[in-house]
Length: 159
Image (cartoon, rainbow, N blue to C red; front, side):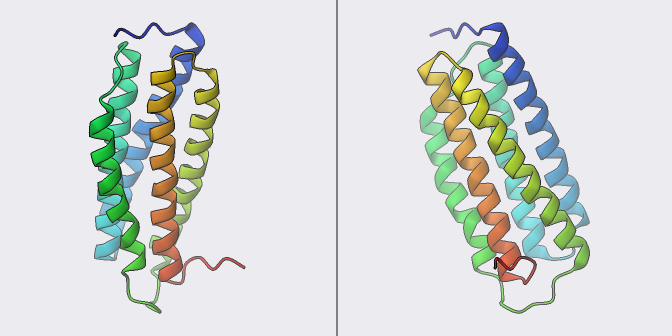
């Protein structure tokens, strides 16, 4: 099935493409700057997931619906990522630079998730909506993984 995109859908996907490219770059750069090994692993893993999102957006832009079975496998891997933060040692002193990088990516994930929400409501094709919804859910999982890492390392304390 070839997906016929409206002009508005194309514009929204171009925005999402830019967001995903930025996320890939930021996660890769931040992983290189990180002091803690677990932080590096988490951000490298999230960079790979963002690259998969970018690939999906590019497929949509080319008129193709990405394979959803592959997405389910990615989702299982994502659940493992959430445990990065949960498995860290409690009470370790947080590196201030790592905390700043985490803060930035948590804010970025919140923003990107919100832009997917808007895009989902604008798409006419149900299959395309499902792909975007899946990506949005993974963006939320990325935020949760960062939150868990921050909370377990004393960088984020909800009140």
